[in-house]
Length: 233
Length: 170
Image 1 (spheres, one colour):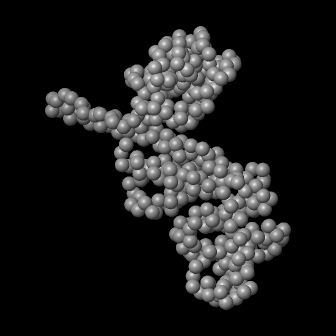
Image 2: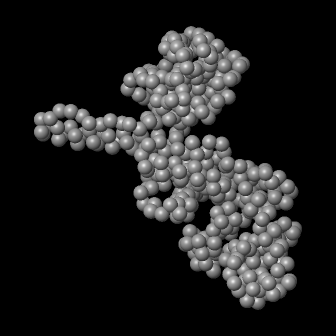
Image 3: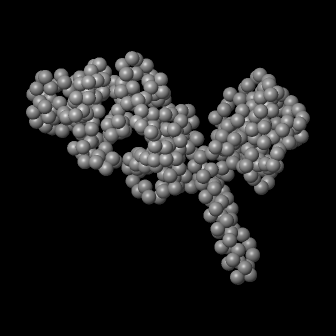
């Protein structure tokens, strides 16, 4: 390897470990200096290329995937049901055998949101009335009564669909209310989480999750929201 | 949680940050980069069963990301290649020195042919042979591109852009 080849190789692969390259570097002082300069330049380059990674990037990816997987599972379920119905009809049997054991995506979405925005749990200021009205309108709702003290109101997105987060005051402390238009569930049920005390309930245009401290009377909050918000279909 | 889900989540936690850094420099836009990374992992999830060797996961994901970027780029072809305004450069890490800013500007304005191998080497830690495989090029072509990219960057930093242009015609 001559000096010209060494310079070319240094610029192409500053950390080259090939024996011929290393031998030339050892034997030629000028090229060793050149290589040192390139290596230092490359270190600066690598540092300059570093980019701040958004917080919760991984959890956002996993959330989006779980919602996508749920959609696919629903399609597969529908096909499976159609197939099962025809078989059962033919055999004259009845029954069902499908049990979901996985944590449902809606519960995941709720837990992810509440974990992601913990600041809303301790917000102290009252949200202006106009802001509250605007947030609800974005979700297809109209404020027709009082929600009591509202210390946080914002819009967030699940797969480009707007959802809303409100923090109301409950008997035991702040209560998170997630309004999820277009996210339909069949029945009212408890949130499947060891960490949070919550319920998910169907609404006229989707569903709503209510999550509060242990011992919070969530039904009261639910009634407060139901009587204060009218949903446009 | 199923085995596939566990495997997927492990990949996301291990590689999403690396992929994001690469995507930011590929798109030169943070929000577009995040969309691209999300779409990449979604596609990876759908074909996760085809990934046999966990060690090959990063290269596999980069290939998906590059294809997805090309697909999106085809949909939004710019009228002409543009010079990036330094104020529009990707959000940076800790290094806020003038030299780092000049380097970022110079990298952002490299053509994609030169920028991509450089990113794969400096951010991805890949060798020339591995980069050649990922980009579908010969090893020699990758070395030439890396050599020219660094020459160009050094010349820009030395304030001799004309020299860079001359050298790139080698």
